[in-house]
Length: 345
Ligand SMILES: Cc1c2[nH]c(c1CCC(=O)O)Cc1[nH]c(c(CCC(=O)O)c1C)Cc1[nH]c(c(CCC(=O)O)c1C)Cc1[nH]c(c(C)c1CCC(=O)O)C2
Image 1 (cartoon, rainbow, N blue to C red):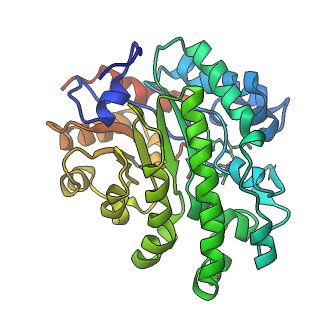
Image 2 (tube, rainbow, N blue to C red):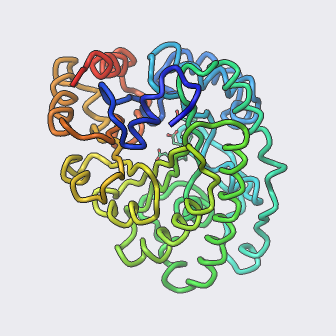
């Protein structure tokens, strides 16, 4: 495989090639647990940060410069596609994302736009600025939200604990759900291909809340669309990582959708998941992020336990089972990354 990266551990691990140690990056590695993030966040709104390429690049680079991770992830959000489609999106401090015009009727669903790449050009611009800063040191991961998870925010109007309205829609009005899901899938395909053209080195698809679904509903309302998206990416040598909370259960279906890597939450034993997947599908994960609140000695032990379980396995990317929480001590995150980087099989 050829690429011009100085550190291509992530790419090699994603394609299940031999590597001296697992690569490390962490979901939500650019965020509120860093005081340097707050220095920027106190001056701009979250969406302003996402939409100003220089600022998005500054934030993307924070964990690269301060933590020494093996991959950068674009600073953006999974909900920018839904905003471009017509959702009136805001992020309220302490509340999370809100859509002022939730999708509740057939008319709302039909009004969602799909020809929206023009409105997402700021993301391509940010990718180009970030790649100038990275200078090929490490890969840049682009990403998008998967249709089911994005639909849940559009329908609920924001975050939800039980996904009651979303499930009511899937159960009572499946055709309307499919209309919305297909529109989000179409936008996501264009959007990820645009990120690839702009220069990302890997892609992660976030279906964060798929755990809410039954197996059958996951297949009908999530898997179908994720499969479509992954099959329509102009991947060339760009690996695709598929993430959901619930991957401990849904990993077999996730692998069937055709990604290079399945990102696993912290419930399952990672080795058992790896062994259950078809040969050549890599895994990413799966430290419980709450371990990062613990003493440094404990953090190290839990990481080394995971590495022992994965000994002899190609196709392993170290990550958390879900994102870093905002109040996790920075020093603990840094310690975890150092433990991984000092490791050698
Ligand atoms: C579900 C989801 C969202 N966004 C995302 C997901 C999938 C990952 C996951 O399951 O956690 C993905 C995401 N969001 C953000 C990134 C940037 C890259 C990274 O560092 O990982 C990524 C990859 C920045 C962000 N996205 C958000 C922030 C916080 C904004 C702030 O500073 O207030 C950041 C840094 C806001 C956001 N965005 C979202 C929520 C629910 C919230 C509010 C809750 C929270 O704050 O954690 C939607």
